[in-house]
Image 1: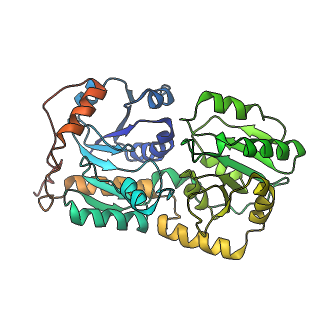
Image 2: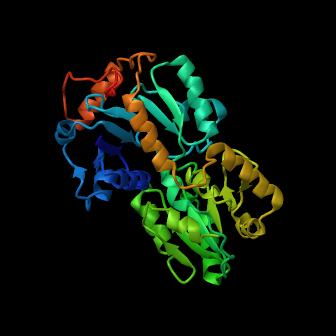
Image 3: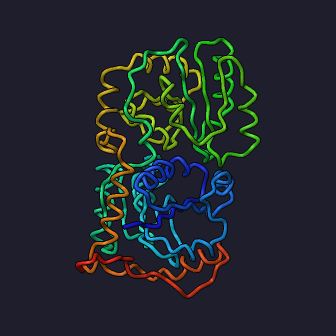
Length: 362
């Protein structure tokens, strides 16, 4: 049986999440289209020929399965709504708020394809309170290209990848002392820095860091981080969820002013500590690596690069499954109205029950 898939995103950073899924869908001979509800995502997808620009065309397409890397999804689109996540739980907020934000149930999804035991546990706990969705652990599509992990010798000089979040109070990109120290280190050639900045950061901040471009500093304007992960020896960051993605390679990360002193990070609070902390990280202390291994086994214990395959398998299987054991999704009238207003598409149509294609024997 052939299926119509839709990959639904908002921001450009979701494109690398959808690409491995698109590759797997095409491998199986199904149909797949993309849609972004924001201009940032549309711009990132503009070269694709399987892109819907108008939401009306999405509705006409009548997808069977909607793979979603956003917080919500239009209820008036047909198809099984599958949450595939736009990042790991970055664990950068106080525990109560951290749990709330990552495991918030908005009532739009039929299936959560979770990344690993930590995420699965959180959503299974939510399922007990809100029995209107299913949870299946699959791993995360975005990190498929990381595997197999490579055992590269340390570069000379060592390659340090800098990645940042966008929230001003949490982002090292705004810190002048950090900027000055990175400028000094890059001028002296002690390390070879490669940098990516979060797409949401202001252009003025991006332009400032781009000025450091030189022999030992390269700014990359991309959301495809995995090729940069692979050539980097360590990461220097703040609180971005890219930290967890990088750690899957079991390479150390130095953080600046992280809100938690996680035992799998080397966290510093002073720009003068950047150089010694990087040097320490490059020695790969055994205790640190052991703690990283524990983290990775909890957030993403899949090292085969086949998470996209598991997501597609789980989605197709659940599409056909009898879902009578689940409650209907909540009415969500206010959120549904906001989605319609945002997209400029007003309809009374709503797939409030769980979308199902019965098997021939049903």
